[in-house]
Length: 439
Image (cartoon, rainbow, N blue to C red):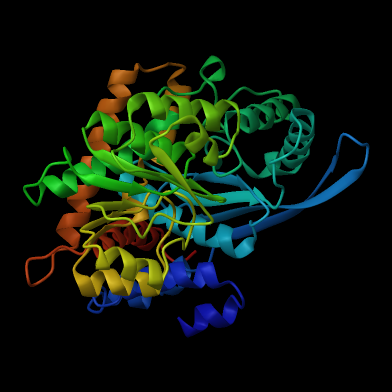
């Protein structure tokens, strides 16, 4: 870890991600001389390559703007690089390296042949016109296209990159190469997208929670859940929770949190989905629309009483103070819908208090799982129906849960799901690297 810190100064997110994996697997690999001799830990903590490039685009006032773009191709031992593109002012090399590192093990857990990658730009689409976003995406793809391909690297969407942005990116790729191929996932249905993709991450997190509860002879029905975020992950997780008769008590965005004391209704969720997906409004507007919804400006939901917490917004949103507030309210389960939403100090609090944590690389793998299924559909030139995809997603999330539970069993009979996810995800990638020899 000291070597990782020395080689990656000021990249706190990446160092944190590597440290969490190393901490969980180190004891497990102590007797694996083949791993040590091949320096697997050191090699796996170094990306295969990082591509950085300038993105120049013209705004509506005819002024030229300059952004930075990146693609981190972390590891392709088990398949082509696979991972999203993030457009946000908070994007930097450290964030993308951490996401690509996490993606490697997340993709491994799905059982599908996908390596790990991530990319994006410090471009913020908020407040930009459609024409500005189109021009930026076209400029971004003009550089990125030479580094990707259906058997090389298959990007997808992430924060700031939805179906609109994917459409512009795919159109430019097709214009430059003259090829229609499954080089991007998260596409719209008319040009090769997959049913279930928008819902997959949120639904998958709920399916993982359902399996985790069943292993404790509990059920989701009647459980109270506090959710952060109001993007795809949070809103579709809320939809599936309502379907399973759980009680959703909160949603949030960067401005604040709404509290729904009696639980979110299906009609309220429909209204909020329209607000966020079509009108791109703020979550505070829900409190103006419904009398039984209260808005808390500048607040996160972690002070509320509930059985389950589902952080679905962004990395490190639950810090030590939030973890203490949650455990003080007897939270029993934390399901990470966002990527690494829990700080190392917060994780220590949860472990000390016996809170069962479903780590992001397991719980939020539903999105990339259905992206992998989109790749398969593109290769077959087929569209699979929604029922088949939901069945496959359920099967994949159940399998991920079982792998994590088996690898995370402790001597006292408890299960450390984070440790289990890291071991199970690491083993498959490491064994493939061993098979290839030193390269």
